[in-house]
Length: 122
Image (tube, rainbow, N blue to C red):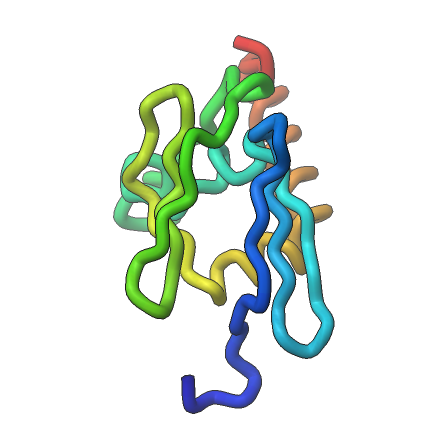
């Protein structure tokens, strides 16, 4: 990567329970992501749509697990979930955004669930 501010992972580790992914970035930044958070924030078109107004609020993923984390070139990982979802490519930059913006993104997600009468459990 040529941009010195670009995110570059130094370690990616899935815990033994397969419900938490830890990513450490150069410069000392590190984040822990629950499988649920990664699943509901998937960068796939299925979740994000093709524009912001097409984004889908994904309910019922509190028990989802990660089946696999597969490298995609030098820029991303594909995360395969046990619910069959496997179309999101998580770029290093997107993983950094998810980590840095976790509190706000999670708050908005929970509000969307509530406003739509949906639940994290189903």
